[in-house]
Length: 94
Image: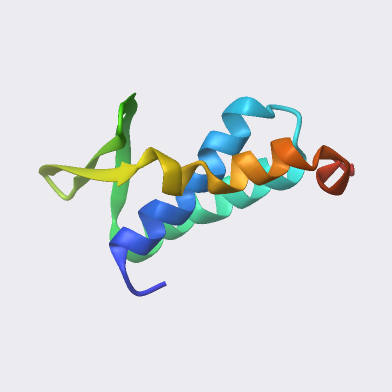
C-alpha cells in the first residue's frame, strides 16, 4: 500500500471492528496484517486512537516524530455498521 493515509484508514477501519467483536478471528488477523504493513512499509508505531465527534484521531510515531491524523467517524465505521446490519453474513469461522 503506497499511501500512509490509506494504510492508517484500512487499519483503523478493521481495528474498530476488532474492538466491537473481540472473538472475530478474521478481523483480528486482518488488523494484524494492516498493523504489520504500517510497521514494515511506513515505519509507523501507533501511540493512541481517540474518538471525539466527528472524528477518530490516530496519534502515531514515524522515526522520532509524533504525528496525528484524523478520520471522519462515519467513514471509519462503515464496515462495522455493515456487519451490525447483517450479522448473519459475518459469522466468525474458526
